[in-house]
Image (cartoon, rainbow, N blue to C red; front, side, top):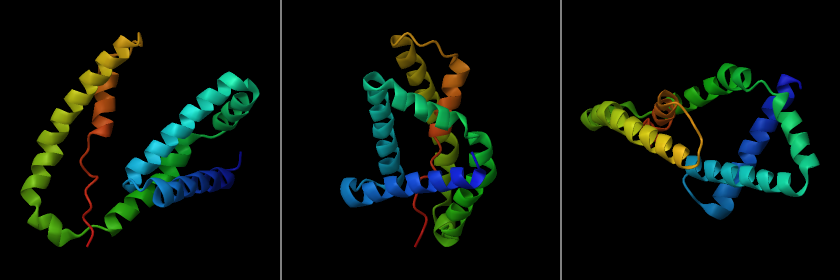
Length: 151
């Protein structure tokens, strides 16, 4: 699949999820988009049980996308630029101490809590994931950079 088509599809899906969130669900942006994406993923799993051909087509479509290249080489730059462009440095300097504590101690504690929780929940469902991968997952979802530092 052509890289331009992949980017266009990802932008269209993201825009559609954002629109659905803004229009109907009205959750904060990131939470709403992830919630809608999770619901659509569950819907695809249900469709797989009802009509496996549709799920097979979606699987072939997803396998043709090089997500590593698409996300890391293209989309990450736009996401980082957007975050840095909206940063209010005066407010950040004013809130230096809580930001420092949350970005170190808070992330370490959150990583441990979510990592161990994920490890034990996975083992309850008889899914064997090494603890180091669970802690890595905890580190991925723990950063506190979800603050709104804009005006």
